[in-house]
Length: 270
Image 1 (tube, helix red, strand yellow):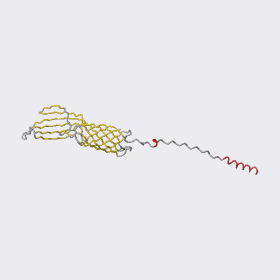
Image 2: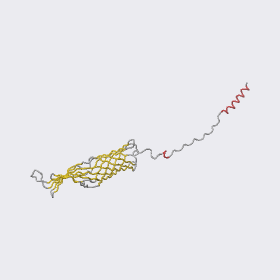
Image 3: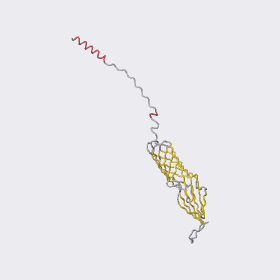
Image 4: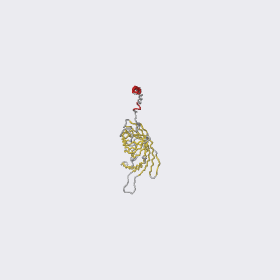
């Protein structure tokens, strides 16, 4: 029995190493992933800017108050004796509108230009008193001639303003800005109708256009506003602007163009 067990144990010990797994063959290295394209890794613009570099749209404005002054004026001439009384009424509309363009010079500074059309109208009543009134009589002894002038015209305003925004145009939120720059105004389409009354008889109507004091005037403007954009990329820009004109288009006694202009603008740009 001993001679049978010993050979079996010897055979088992010799067979054990053969059953152990041999060394595994080396695996080939995994192929390297291709590097992403430079534009994919670092695009030039990560996001669309809140305001594009160039925008265009339209605007509407409301003037407070109007383009012409309302009031009375009286002057006297001694030789020959003449008194001239005038009264003016501002009849023009307070509304205007036009186109608006903007171009960014840097990420915060932009140039904005508007071309706005405004319509002005005034009614000037003028009375000429010739002679001397006798204080001892009840009535007026002077000869009176009455004129009523109704004038309409178009104003073309061109402000070119430098805007400074509170932050970069890429920041994805509403922004505010302030602005300043020169502005030019030109008058066109002057139409007048003047009625004369003398001795109880009316004569209508002389349609000679009123002569403006200046056809072109210049001024300086400053304003403050903000930009709000909707989900479709349309921007609403409410704004307050003040303009100081260096001259007046009309300067006919009581018919005076207003030098200080206050307006509220609403612009829609794309």
